[in-house]
Amino acid sequence: MDETRELALRLPAAPGVYRFSDAGGRMLYLGRAVSLRRRVVSYWGDLRDRRHLAPMVARTARVEAVVCDSAHEAAWLERNLLRANLPPWNRAPSGGQEKEVWIRLSQSARSPGVAVVHRPSSSPGGRHFGPYLGGLQVRRAVSGLSRVLPVGYAGGQAAGTRREMARVLGVSAAERDELARTLAAVLDRDPAAVAAVRERLSARRDAAAGALAFEFAARLQDELEALAWVTAEQKVTRATPDDFDVCGWADGLLVRFTVRGGRLSGWTQRACGAATAGRDVAATPPEWAGFARRNAELAARLVSPAGSTGRNDRDGL
Image: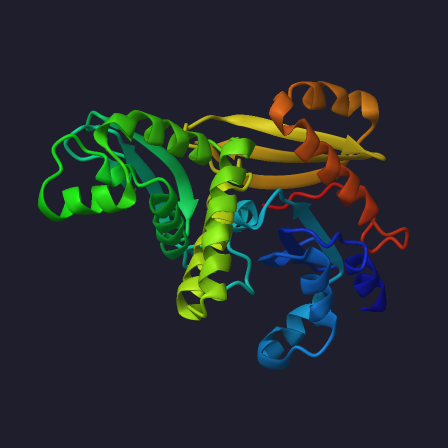
C-alpha cells in the first residue's frame, strides 16, 4: 500500500481522470479530480465519508491517470469512460449528474440573443456551441455574457419593456452584428475576446463589492467562474462524430486513446518499443500531439520498478 501511495505522489497537481486497478490488472474504480495528486493521495489518508472505499483501496496495486487541459475536460472524460465501462466500485453508470447542454446564439432581427438548449436545432439564423456539461454552470455563463454583451436587446423590432431596456443598456439594432460577432469569438475561445469579457465582469464585481452589494458581487463571481468553465480547453467530446485514435509514447510505453463518435471513450496502455509505436504516434492528429505526449510521459512515470505495477500489456477501458 505504501508503494501505491508513492505512485499517487508522482501525479501532477492538475485536473484529470484517474483509475485504480488490482494486481491482476482488473480496473476497480475511475474518478476525476481538479488536482490529481491531492485527490488520489487522499485515498490513503482519512477516508471520512468514503469509508466504504477502504476495501477497494486495500486491493489497489496500480494507479493510472490522464492529465486534462481543464476541469471541464476532465468531467467530460470521466463521463465518456464510465459510459463505456463501469468499474465495480463506481456507482454512477451515467458518469456524473451534469446535464449535456449547448449554447445557441441567434442574431436575427426578430429574436437575437444567447440561450441554453438541450440539443442543437436546424432552425435558421442561429449557431450552436458545445456540447457543455453542467446546465447550471452554462446558464450562469450565459447570464454573464448577456450582462456584458446584451445582444438580446439589439433586435430591430424591440417594443415596450425591451425597448426601454435597450435604451437603459445603451444598445441598438445597429450594434447587433458586432455584439453577435464578439459573443461568437468568446464561445470560440478566442483569448482576447474572453479576456475582455472577464475584465468587464470583474470590474462590475469589484464595483458591486465596493458598494457593499455583496450578494450581487457573489453572483458576478459565479458568472466569472462559469465563464471560465465554458471557455476552457475541452476536446474529449466534440460536436462532430469523428472516429480516430490518439497515441503517445514515452520510455517504452504506448498510450492509446480512442475517439469514437466524437467522444474519447477508450484508454489503454502497453509496453512497446519506439519503432513499433512510431506509426501510431505519427498518425495522431497534430492538435492532440501535446495531450498524447504528456500523458505517455505520465504513464511511464507511474510505472513502478517493483513489478506489481510493471510494464506488462494492459487493456483498460
